Length: 95
Image (cartoon, rainbow, N blue to C red; front, side, top):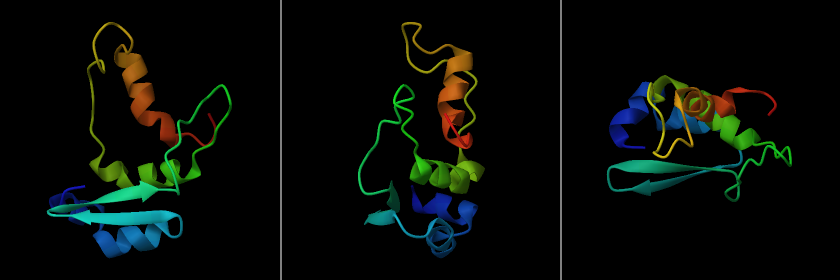
C-alpha cells in the first residue's frame, strides 16, 4: 500500500492496532505491504477454507477499496456480477 493511502485508513499505527496479531507489515520505499496470516491461502470454497485474516484486512481497507464496474480479465471468466462477487468475497462471514 503506497504511503499516500495510509492516512485514508487512519495511518499505520491505527491499522496495526486494529488488525492485531497475525499481521506482518513489510516496508518498502514509498509504502508497506500487509501480510495477512502466516502464509498465503487460496480460500477454496469447495473445502470451505475460511480466511479470517483476509476478511479482517478487507474490512480495515474497505475505505480505499476499488470500485469496479467492469469485468475482471478477458475471455468471459468473470462477468460484471462475478467480478463484484470476487471483490466482495471477504465481506461475508462465511463462504
